[in-house]
Image 1 (spheres, rainbow, N blue to C red):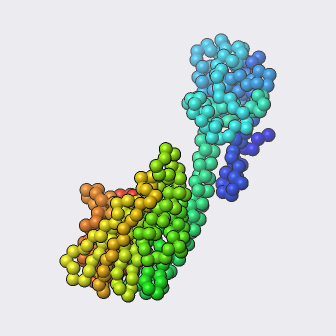
Image 2: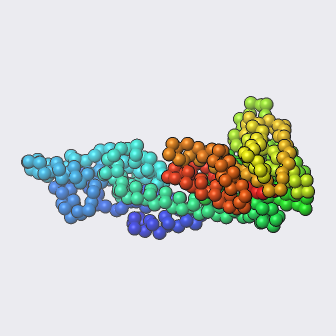
Length: 414
């Protein structure tokens, strides 16, 4: 008549797109039903024969009109003289006249809301299932909670499968830049650590015979929303490089800004509600290998620079304006800064996931000073070793605190 509960896990665990949402019919169990002309003595007989029966429906014709709770019924009938008084009376004497009644086609999500709205008794007594208004069976609250948990677990598995595949796509997108960096001959190292399976940070590297271009960017959010933004930002940046070349970082940021604002419906100077207030912070730079000049443009990002023999680390700040976002003008112009680099100069750039990570005994941010300390202490080390030290310092600082954001940092030696 109905699929028993034991068959549910088979299709509930199916993570293919054809996943069928269960309904009240899947929880409906055929049970004996009493009629209004039957007595409490007969109810006692049914409960005695069916010891696993938690509740007993009462019908009038084909329509359910109430539900008899086993514990309440037995408690009442065990009172002194109650059997003598009620044995031959109609079973409606101890019947709940307002049980939860649902149609067999009702989905699990709606059924869950209905059960919660109806109150605790719908979970303890169960609910009556009908087909076209006629009694069909009884469902139990415990079974409903089990199915809800199974459905949620299945949805979570489906989401995780999707996110894991999205991670493959995102890593494939970034792999080209890693390969270009490795083939460029530059002494450089890059660390990319998404907080979740996918992340909102991305990097881009392009090498030419005259030099190389690099970007380290932090898009709005992390996880899946952040990963979507990295696709948008990376694609628009690639198109900008194809159109204008890699030598003018400021122009590239301006072009990406216009593209993001147009794509996300961030309209300037109108009352139109924007589609989103998303964008990215980024550090873009072109290194001219012949002149040993670094042309840097930053959108709320900075460079750490340490020259040979220099006593302290120099900070080079970008413009305090993010790319995209509602409050940035479509025609905003970022500025290029030219930084002469000596042989052996160190350059370090990071997203704010490193700087803002909470940790230490006072639960404060990692900050920029600790980055400067590492660069000074490791000034003669290879870029890969410097980044490894930063990673260790970050992990030690973070301790038992949760990772707050995606973390990406890039270090190279001129």
